Each structure stands twice: as structure tokens, then as C-alpha cells.
Image (cartoon, rainbow, N blue to C red; front, top):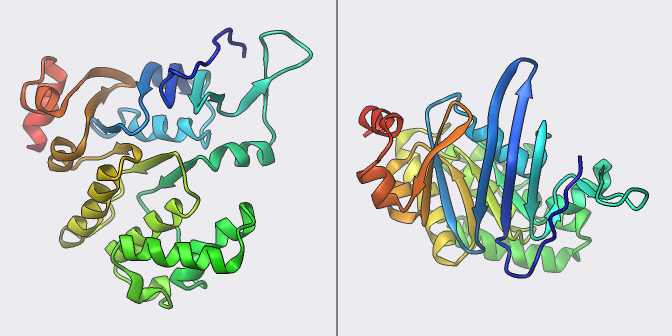
Amino acid sequence: MSTTDTATSTDPLVRLEKIRKSYGSNEVLRGIDLKIASGEVVCILGPSGSGKSTLLRCINHIEKPSSGFVIVDEEVIGFRKDARSAGALRELKEAELARQRRTMGMVFQRFNLFPHMTVLENITHAPRLVRHVASRKARERALELLDTVGLKDRASAYPGQLSGGQQQRVAIARALAMDPALMLFDEPTSALDPELVGDVLEVMKKLAQQGLTMIVVTHEIGFAREVADRVVFMDNGEIIEQGPPHAVIDDPQHERTRAFLSRVL
């Protein structure tokens, strides 16, 4: 892979350039171009199998794009310039990639908490291990974040003692403990019972109001309408339509967007 692009201070925080991803003959992403400004909340909608989650996982290089580039905070994710060849990029080793990922927090459909650790230990583990934050400082920050997500009184509980919604809020606090510039949410409420969804969405709304840059793959149309700065509709590995929520959700221009929304609204 190679690129001749040079980042400038006016560039968006996230830039996706012609992202393609294939599994054998199955092309899941078909040349995605997308720019996201610092502080912007972008919600990605679309039917199952449209490539939404794969796109999210390509951003932090959990999935390696087959071609194209992801640039976050002026760094090409997963690669760096090869000093031996002008304009070429060399793929990063896992330790170098882990350093890049520190700028991105990700919340999955499943909570992935360590069951043998308390809530507080789950949140302080990565800052202490990866960022070498002092135990006292990591603990203070974790308690602040638990207060933010409404769970300060559950710091000593274990994940198995929490509801699904509480576990997901802990997962959000854990991601925030690394002080990311960008948060990625992959259908964070899809594994929850309906009565637990609201608490998680309220936490996400609060983060959006605080100016955190967020990319959210979701089926929660009401959340997208209320919180997103921009809605992106994907189908068959392509961006079909994008714009302000009132335009895409309430007055979609593309027939595929209209057909999808007519089924889910």
C-alpha cells in the first residue's frame, strides 16, 4: 500500500479513503469514503449484512481493509511511512498498532468484561497496564467515570452481579478510561432487553453533549434522530445516503433508504 496524501491541521479527525474489504469472493465494503470532524456524532444505519460493523472494525484495524486507508488524528491506522521507499507504507507490528488504538475506544454488542475482576478493576486495568497510570490516579478516574454512567455505587461488584445494561455502561466507562479522541459503538444496545436500552442510550447522549467524537452503528432510530449530527445509511457495502437526521430519516431521497426505514419505523 502507498499514499501521497499529507495531513494538515484542518483535516477532519477521521478520514476513510476508498475502504474495501473482501472475504474471498464476498466483497463486504465497496470503496467507502467518509470524513468525520472532531466532536461530530455520526450514526450509521442499514440492514444486517450491509457492512456497518465491518466498517467500524476497519477503523481501528481489528479488521484489516483489503485496500484503502483509515486516517485518525493524522495517522494512517495500521501503517507507517517506510523510510526505505518514498511514499510507501509499512504495516505495523501488533505493539505499534496497540499504541495507535489508544486514541480509539470501542464498545461492542457484547460487554467483554473480565468476569473475575470487579467493576473498578475492569476499568483501571488498561490505563495501569497500557498507559502506566498510577493506581491511585486510575482509581480516581474510574470512580469519576462510574459516576458519569450512574454506577458509582457498584464499583466493588463483579460483572455477574450486574444487569446487561449495567455491564454495558461499565464497558463504556472502561473505554473512556483510556481518554480516547474517538469512540466507536457497534450496536451497543442490540444484546440488551428492551427495558435496559434507555439507560445505555442516556449515557451515550451525555457523552455526545460533552463533545466526544462518536461513530455509532445502531438500529435505534430515535437515538440517531435526536443525537446524531449526521446519519449515514449503508446497504450492500456502500454508503447510499448521508446527511442531517431530519433529512435522511424523515425525508430520505434514495428508494433503498425509504424501504429500510419503512420497515423499522
